[in-house]
Amino acid sequence: MKLHRELEITQKSAWFLVSKLRKAYENKDSKLKGIVEVDETYIGGKEANKHESKKLKQGRGTVGKTAIAGMRERETGKIIAQVIEDTTKETLQGMIAENTEEGTEIHTDESRSYQGLKNHKTVNHNIGEYVRDNVYTNGIESMWAMFKRGHKGTYHKMSKKHLHRYVAEFVGRHNNRKSDTLEQMSDLVLGMNNKRLTYKELIGG
Image 1 (cartoon, rainbow, N blue to C red):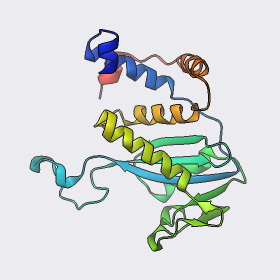
Image 2 (cartoon, one colour):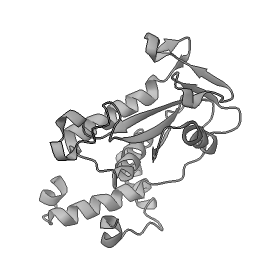
Image 3 (cartoon, rainbow, N blue to C red):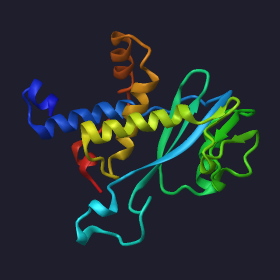
């Protein structure tokens, strides 16, 4: 809406423009190393707030929500995150293997999906344990808190279809936050290389 007003273009054109900017943030980053915190979160409306015809009636909690998995390198604060279809052991551990270097120390909560990882330490949130010595996932959880503030306070709704674009935007902005404005703009322009996005593709199934 701000772009629509400031640039004096239609809301449709403004949405298309910002979608192109989000695509520029979609980069294949280098692998994480050292100590890496891993956690997942869920985005979607609460069952209790949905219209009766749209309720899934399959329980509460994560029902009807979309999962996002994220990893944060402790030393640099760099984050990698992506929308995932499920939070099974195969999915989460596959993502970790793909995005971390050999010998990386992984910190997670007590979820069974992380059991069996090499060089793995956990904190047990179920018993109120959030920090044990240098083992914690507070950094990646802070990212989720910021993401959800943007969801509720700015965008209000992020559809599953376009959720990966919002994730790319927040991760890109986070990873580039220490750069000055000109560096951020330059990096964003460079990120547009070979990333064509048509309106037909944007609204397609």
